[in-house]
Image 1 (tube, rainbow, N blue to C red):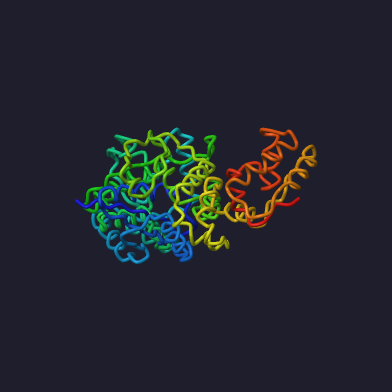
Image 2 (image 1 turned 120 degrees about the horizontal axis):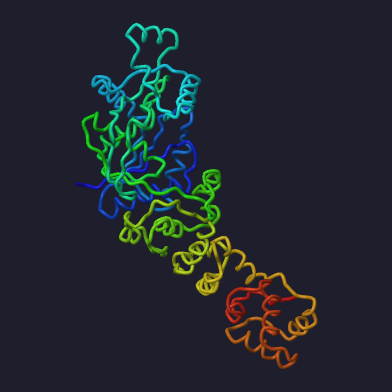
Length: 441
């Protein structure tokens, strides 16, 4: 059996870290098994689905390296969903209902007041043929609901373990709206059957959907994939993340300088019993991926954790991988490799590179404390002319020490701050030999 997974986002907005978790898990399962990963665009809502978002989803996945084996669009399969709906009608598992949202709300409130679960009462099933004709004449087309077998639905979840849901506690799901729009629950079932999806990993908020989809698949004469439901993300303090997901889109993280492997490495282990380890490739992530290591507890996500990992990605990157970007800064070819060796241990994101080149090219804006002004002025008067080499820093500070009596941090820190305009950075011997201009005050 070929392992086949899918990621099925709706092109109604940009995908965020919560979506990425689902996409990544399904991608890694397929790649680890040498299987197939399908990108399926859930675009059955013509009003909200936009081509710009469909394009953005593909761009974001390509940026991360999560390539797909084929792409499917649900808007191309509407005839197939209609066929499945006819099958359910023929089997007596599909019925039309006409309650308005207000009427349904009143029913739910009454049930809750009586201590009953707020489940649809199946009133539409009690209508006679004449009643249905009248309802269509008065209210137009109704919604189409799937008739659940009111028994327990059980499956072995790949993360949550054995699960069991009493279908009597769940309303018969609406699968087709009154305006004819096919809803997720039906479209997803038909797609998973037709596309041979063997494993489905998604958020724990889909557990009830899974129960009803298992019954729909059975009604259509098919078994169901292996399901697994991962925990939902929260903020670093356990707060709901849902209100912030709009600011945690993949393109926002990309714009902030997060490196793909930093993001993938964190998301592949977050919420599992395994430590977060920076991986060198997606293949390496797939080899070590194990759904059984994940738990059901809400998973805390802090975007600030991405930046130390991003810094490590850059520190490990060879010059050849950065040569074009460094050349774009205007760094001369003869010092470009040395510049990268010096800069890469002192940047968090690529956006920090131009700042370090500006320091070496033009000199930093001197940062001088009031109590150090006379000392720094005296030291700069002793600074020789360019060019500098690896011994220039030691020779200069040695001469300054002898002339002023300063030593240790009181000697080195004021001079670092005056030359670079920064309190931290590369070894000053390395900085000096790359300076393109004599530092001045």
